Length: 336
Image (cartoon, rainbow, N blue to C red; front, top):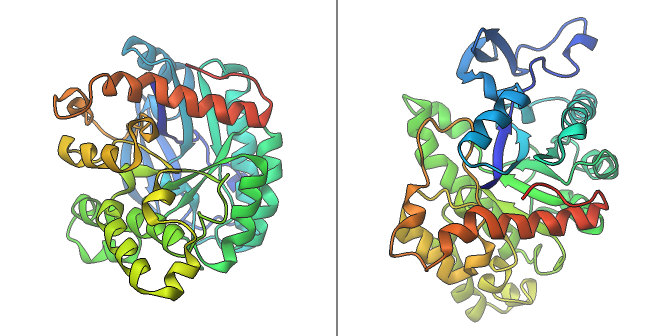
């Protein structure tokens, strides 16, 4: 099994030791033996097992469960969308250096995605060459960046540069201010995450941002969330609105078929619909490891899904995407 949606937590938050006063909003880990508490704004956000920060223990556990490799990305709280541009840039460089160093001698099993300063889209674009040169094969961004959505002109340079370098853009669902209205964060997670990733990918499609960048490689977390309910509406409006048709030189479905998706829809029927729309080869294994305490993908083997689909998702499809990315980076083949 080759898992392309996994998260990592540094044992020590990069960059914080360079500050005389560190903002409490920086996520940090407080280790307690075999587990650790992730603190955000001074409060315990979640408790994680050692595999969240110890890559050797993580690999041993993954291999014992049949894992053959993982693509590591920052725990979303580490993306720090609140950080001022200068600190965001310094932090991103420090995190990327840390992750590149951690996987440098472990590329037979691990690959990594960098982070960028989210309040400075131009600075984010400028950092992509450093990310590629460090041996990281892409970048993780939140579905709702703090200054402008990903389809806005602010991010055009970033998307252009990611396409030029052949990097993967992993768009991860996010919470945001709406979460605060819920009595429990997991209740918000069930509602807000599918909405934000659907809006992010739908925005890239409906504005033509994907159509004009046919070489841009995008992986949508959580199966694209609400995207499947948006595509027919977008295409209907495109068919009756010349201005929208001008924005979109191809249909929404055509754009959607050029992306990749993890299968985290929690329902075989929903996943079957995604497969019917975008193709079985565009679904790659992603488990949200290590933050899901139980198997959330047992439904991959249900009969409603195409024959051989579970094997393709767990092995063939992610290996094909990883090979595409590693060939682009010139760093050689990765885990399979």
